[in-house]
Image (cartoon, rainbow over all chains, first blue to last red; front, side):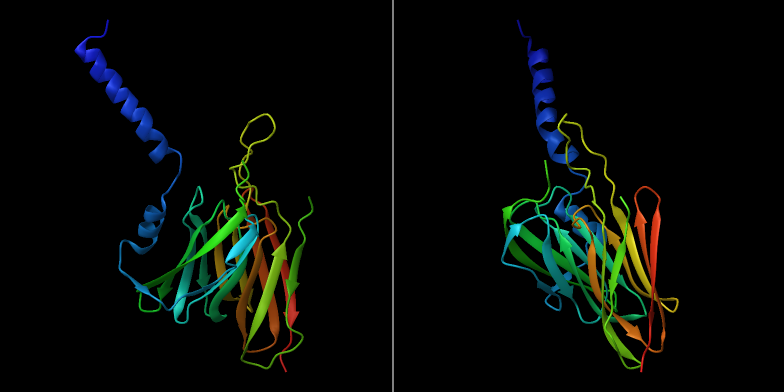
Amino acid sequence: MLTRRDTIAIGIGASAAVLLPVTGAYALTTEEAITAYTGGADMAEGGVTITAPEIAENGNTVPISVEAPGATEIILIATGNPTPNVGRFTFGPGSGAPMVATRIRLGRTQDVMAIAKMEDGSFASTAVEVKVTIGGCGG
Amino acid sequence: MTVRPRIRLPRSASAGDSIVVKTLINHDMESGQRRNSAGETIPRQIINRFTCEYNGVMVIDVALEPAISANPYMEFEALVPESGEFLFTWYDDNGEVYTATEAFEVS
């Protein structure tokens, strides 16, 4: 027979079991990835342009390019991937333009976000939705 | 697997131009998310950093995550104030470093 104390213990155990996968399974959430980069600073809308297909048939290689005039660094975040960080692109003094094109993996249909760090230390961001027909995270 | 970097530069440019540089290296970029047929997680092994310098000046420094596709492709722009040499470097999770150089002449 269950005493009141046992019931409470089971209750705590059950809620811990429910909560753990949420915080434990993924290293970082999208929010955390953004805050880790910007330190919680405000981000301007615009000034960053992402070029990506509206529909990607194969999530394993989605061509994407991003440019942000006046940026010293750009990060890409895949908001629906198991780990949202995609890459950090730092432009040196030999860079001809703050732009980069690459190919990324998207696990499912999601928003892809770019955050640019500007010369004055401010941040700007944009996001585009990419529909994915076949996911690219294996499994 | 032999890692073979591929570089694409324009044929010509004038001094001070910004040129488009395209690079590709064959690499699985094993994400650490996949499992083998026995259900065990395949350990992560990716290229985690890529840099490009021209005559010792940093053009771009990239931190790559597992979400970059296999055979990572990078396209970017570089300033070529004079003739010289590009140095490309890829850093593998396993500690290996792959480099490629490419001479470039401005007119």
